Length: 123
Image 1 (cartoon, rainbow, N blue to C red):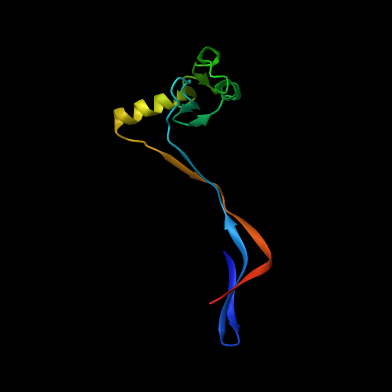
Image 2 (image 1 turned 135 degrees about the vertical axis):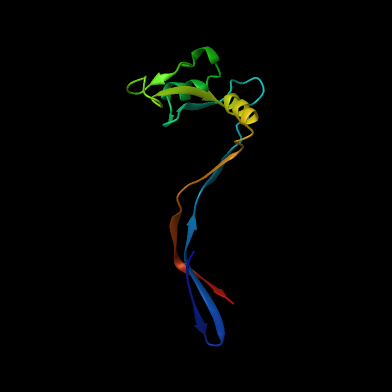
């Protein structure tokens, strides 16, 4: 929060001239019954890539349309250059097997939103 404080006569006053806002989102890696397990991207030890095609196909709920093969970026013989398709069900199975993982929470960067005129709060 962007604020200042002071006095007006004998009364303390806080003046709020802006607030910070952010977005919080969580992923629980669950799927709706009867639907294709959600595509989470192609993963490797080097990171995650997303095939735009698979992202688009997830809305059609047709498993036969997915590109379900590994993808190589660069030399496929080098560790981490091969990315494997991962879906919610794959992550859940991995989490159970390894007793790790769980829900994932992500936060956006914060953004200052100015308030004009400022809000005065009498304390």
